[in-house]
Length: 416
Ligand code: ZN
Ligand code: ZN
Image (tube, rainbow, N blue to C red; front, top):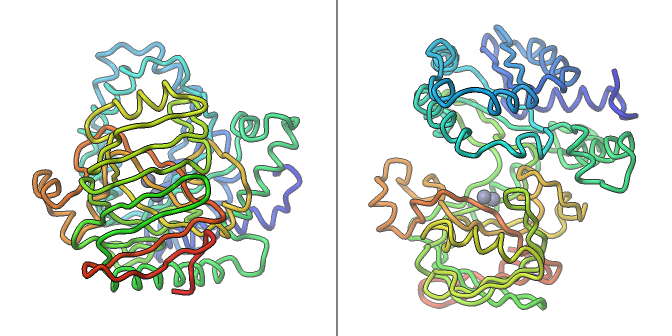
């Protein structure tokens, strides 16, 4: 097998980690794997490990971005709008059986460049409608699921444009293995430790029930954000309806909650470039008043930033507050991955746009109106993370009575 000089044992350990810690395959369980065809070698390791862990059957859904591109370029709107029932039935069936779902990512970031976005929307709407039963289960984490990524040539070239292909692939493999904590003893145990650390921080913050957080650093961030009443800090593992504990994202470093989208004052300065719709926005700042972006600038990509903010009302407001220590592994890599799975775990961030209903008590059952009334950013086409964490970031939690607790100092947890 060719894993660009990586030890096959480590790659197998990664596949095992995805199976055991990621989706946590149980005895007699169906396992469905979405795997790009070009990652067949890794996909086969996942198959072996899933059976080894007791899977009843491993159902492979091989995909191909080249095929997708051709499909979008040539299929008529009618064809795109007609999602075959048998395909939907198959997803809904395995979902109903409590299958574990593994998605292996890592594709050409420009695979669908030039495809009319309208075409994708038609297809997406049709598939969402037909597979609603399945996606509802996934969204509510009723069934275990996980997303992990392996290097792909065009992706590696984008991350390391100055390296020849082989070296770029090897470099990306190294970073990914490091990010998922492989290569330093028992990875499954390392994940258990990491998860209990994240859980401890969530509990601490949930107990504090801060009403506001204040951010400041030397590059110009001086910003206060409100948190909704009854907000919940989440991060790390989740528990499926079946009782199985799983990790939806590998890697994962963030803990996150719901901001009150009506309360944000001051200026946030970006710490890393933001890649939005294939364009880079660099060194930008956003100024908020009463929860809304009222002024902004960017050294590069101003028009892209403008189109993001002007998308809809919700895109001018925040939908996520996330904490990631500056000392965390991905942060230390100082690499732009052009892939949310990695980039959002690189630094403290916020998202412009829609909130996660699970990050407020009772949120999963709230109507859009109720969520809005609670301060949630309930309706936006966007949810775009942007990074603000620097080596000198200070974050202070503010209680309802005005008392304060320093949470982050010098970019890292301040012993709380
Ligand atoms: Zn996040
Ligand atoms: Zn996010």
